[in-house]
Image (cartoon, rainbow, N blue to C red):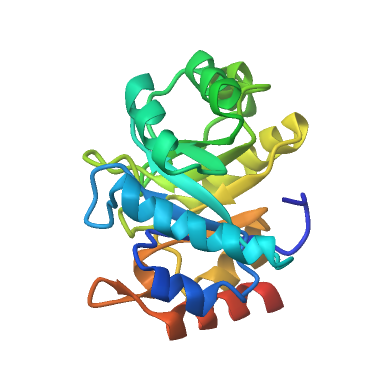
Length: 232
């Protein structure tokens, strides 16, 4: 994931191999597979099917997205059991996971770790760089990217709502100093991603519900969103 280039795209909540086959040719960097409580949650066995397809395409010399497992406060045993079945490329942690836990995940499974930071929809005050540093400096060396998402009291993220975007610059400043990519999620759609990219230039964008129709991933919507981002 290059810093300062056209944002990468992560499509989260994939459940169908057939949908994956229809979008794998698009310039998508990451496919999110949800193991946290969610209507998009999949079993390890279903995740293994998605990953097996990606690996089969990669074995033919094709560039394919990395598989990202989305978790909220998983236990070590839970991660061990799931990754034994579904060999993910990235583990995305969405709650109060400590720097030590992130480091353990990285070293134990040989995966990248994305750490989510939850921000409220109407953040009253933009945090200072010192506050962000206090919050995130302990994670340096234990994670590979930071993901900003809208706070959800039940699921941690995946609310389908935007957060207070004026908080992005201070997190981006910290991410640049830490030499880590900054991804943005939370309520993104084809209608607002231009505004986000133009105003804040994150390293990556992440969405799920906006590319669904009746709760199912819509290939046409995914294609339109990816085209919008990659031409920005």
